[in-house]
Image 1 (cartoon, rainbow, N blue to C red):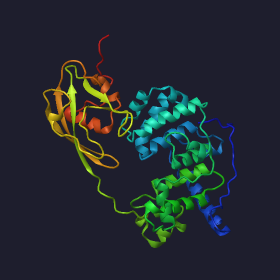
Image 2: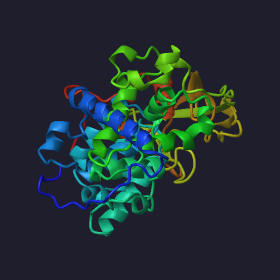
Image 3: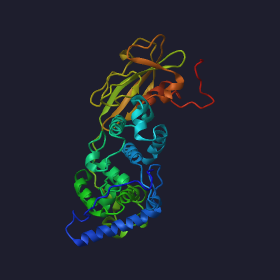
Length: 390
């Protein structure tokens, strides 16, 4: 957290600029006031967040921690992020430390969190911010010039880290607003309308707490299924509660079926338990991550699925099938297992058994290895871990 006496810039904000009358501004202010009162009592305790009480005492968020958490939270749940966030801030407590880390170490720490382009952008952003003196810019426009920061993330950092008014709209906020105003337009088309409502509601004071209050309301009360409307501080203003069907909102179009892709993975093991790995290309799906050899599947085409496609000779034996779902397609891999002698082929390397859990392996590759060698990717206990002799 930044010290309480940190010098901060402030800006004026015309909270009514997106509305047409004083009554609308007053209603929006009333909603914001009640939501902040609810948040003061019912806020979530999160490792990157300062509490309303701390905020009232003058404690200010650390922009580095807010940025890091927001990048991690993109398309990932809060519960999944907590452990990764703690690991990152222990290893790299500030943006300078993260910039000084190797890209490989960052990818290893990120492994399992998914959407790996985020990790590459995270490192690129840290490098750029550190090169510019180690301070994050405090406006949406300047933040959006940094790698990996788009419209939502720039608004979230601006509001939460710098307490500047900004319309922060994530999935939780979309659900709250869709229900509050019974927006019948499908969500994919309603985003500008939702954003306009949020812009009208953002208060001139405590905009960061307001943004987090909206998120917390959607995460804990205005949930996708079985919302707890009787506990909602905005129930008196919610038109979906009046209609009696809040779960109808937000309106969504039917999802298209994901294409199914197929391929094969080859888990080669040395006599000492080392596993043969290689690094994927820096760009593209799972870019820069580590993998076992696989066939040439992509999001658009299938790869070969038999042991005949193995990258080198071996006593390949079928070890089973694994499935994994990506954002835009589903994948099935036939897994083959062999014991190999000799040096690693060009472009490959041997990872010792006690090092596998620390490699930058995406979840799909961990599944493939586990199909061939159950338990191989699990972190060894302090008592069972074996180390090579000096």
